[in-house]
Picture 1: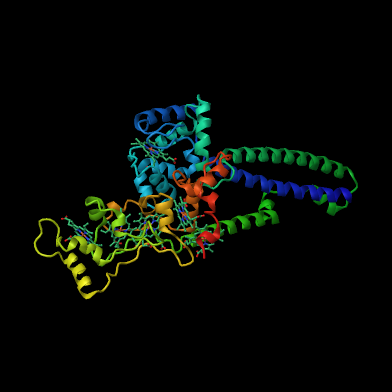
Picture 2: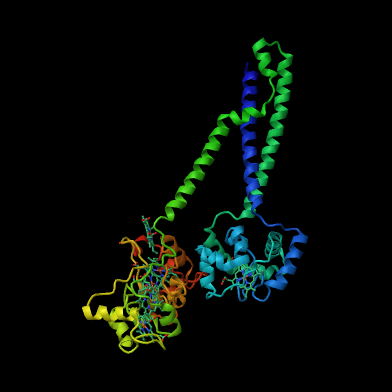
Length: 422
Ligand code: HEC
Ligand code: HEC
Ligand code: HEC
Ligand code: HEC
Ligand code: HEC
Ligand code: HEC
């Protein structure tokens, strides 16, 4: 009887292992799906395309007009890298935060579109980007040192894809070996039991065949599948929740057709001339009609037009009746969060455009950044503090001198809840 029980145990283990095996094959397929072809043909086809279309602005391991490209497929999903190469402006306009951050980081330099590239071309380009010109490992290592930190920050750490694949492959091999050994044990046990005196029941049990269908009915399989489905549903729900209240792209119609493109762009009026608060306090301030009147007492219309422009008449009406112009607020953090302009603009030395986008090109102002907590934190993780010429930081710089990483906002408490929440 002991032998029969152990046979049951072994059979059960075979079933569980088989389930695990199929799952790993599934995950493996996933990992494979998103990796880049490293074959020589693909790399050399990619090099030709790269040399004719990209070389003026890019190198693999050093920064030129655009970023060093090696590792690009790890910094954002492969499909996004492809869309970026085909038409970066479309991806940026879609609000993708990685693309927008990168665009801002490179001073809003527009990378030309490459709509003519086929999907094969794109795959070959990626092969070259990731596996081409490996001859210079020193340069690659140096680049990995500087670019690696940024890459890790944007992907949020985690196990790099290639390690994951290796680990999975090893696991699959080990599982296969165990399966084979268990199979051998079963056949030996079966043979042995068949030689014994057995009653009908036991005989039937011993000679039953292994059925694949049973795997799908086994508890282990059902539990694992349920867990995967729950995880997927939860992720979708969370993604949805995170975008609740995010107003990126919001560009309401304003009561007066005031244009930043004309005033801040063409006429080159300083932002601070109207947004008087940015360097001194928390709020940037929206200008009162009096500030408009500094010029519009004289300027009654656009050059060459007759009479008073109806839009400018609205300014006069507001001043005459002493009623404020009811500008529609575009950017609005919830009350629970504290944001201070002077801290960022005056102390931090950050350009308005980094957060607000190319305002001087906007006819109507729209919200450029997501303004989520993740957005604030992400920048605080990545951004170095402008310590130069700021005596306030001298001490801190000395203390920090031993560390090889630059002093980032996170190091001065930029990730502490209480700094941003009351
Ligand atoms: C005129 C210069 C220019 C050319 C030509 C150009 N790029 Fe770019 N590329 C840039 C700039 C600048 C950026 C940084 C993002 C931005 O400002 O839009 C960039 C970003 C990228 C990125 C994102 C990098 C990252 O770290 O994620 C990829 C990928 C890329 N380029 C691939 C290509 C490929 C492939 C080609 C050729 C088919 C190409 N680029 C041609 C200027 C250029
Ligand atoms: C001549 C005055 C003037 C100048 C110069 C000016 N602005 Fe404005 N700005 C306004 C007015 C008026 C509004 C409110 C109406 C609107 O949203 O268009 C505004 C709105 C904004 C908003 C949206 C505020 C909200 O409701 O969230 C931002 C952001 C902004 N300006 C940034 C800038 C930047 C950056 C510059 C410099 C490149 C600049 N402004 C230059 C007058 C000005
Ligand atoms: C430093 C001077 C200056 C200030 C301050 C200024 N403007 Fe202007 N604005 C001008 C000039 C100059 C023009 C005409 C440009 C042209 O001739 O094309 C103009 C044009 C306009 C127009 C276009 C009129 C039309 O018929 O299309 C509007 C609307 C306007 N301004 C609104 C405002 C508002 C609102 C403010 C205050 C928030 C303001 N401006 C502040 C200089 C100024
Ligand atoms: C670090 C990112 C950042 C920078 C840099 C920045 N802003 Fe803002 N700005 C914000 C955020 C976040 C809000 C929303 C604030 C709120 O709702 O409390 C905002 C709001 C505004 C508003 C609406 C009124 C207000 O104060 O809430 C104006 C106008 C404005 N910014 C103008 C500017 C100008 C002009 C500059 C450059 C001199 C600038 N900002 C630089 C992030 C930034
Ligand atoms: C573009 C980058 C950037 C973004 C986006 C940004 N910050 Fe900052 N923030 C900085 C920098 C740089 C400093 C450091 C300024 C200095 O030298 O004190 C800073 C400092 C701060 C501080 C002071 C931290 C301390 O320990 O003294 C607070 C609070 C803060 N930010 C809040 C916010 C909030 C809230 C948001 C989002 C609504 C935000 N920041 C978005 C760059 C950014
Ligand atoms: C750099 C600034 C910053 C820091 C640091 C920060 N937050 Fe936030 N937090 C924000 C901003 C901005 C929002 C509002 C964003 C939004 O509405 O999407 C927010 C929103 C929240 C919310 C409300 C979420 C919602 O959807 O209403 C909670 C809860 C929260 N933060 C908790 C925390 C905790 C806990 C910490 C510390 C571990 C922390 N925050 C650190 C800036 C910050």
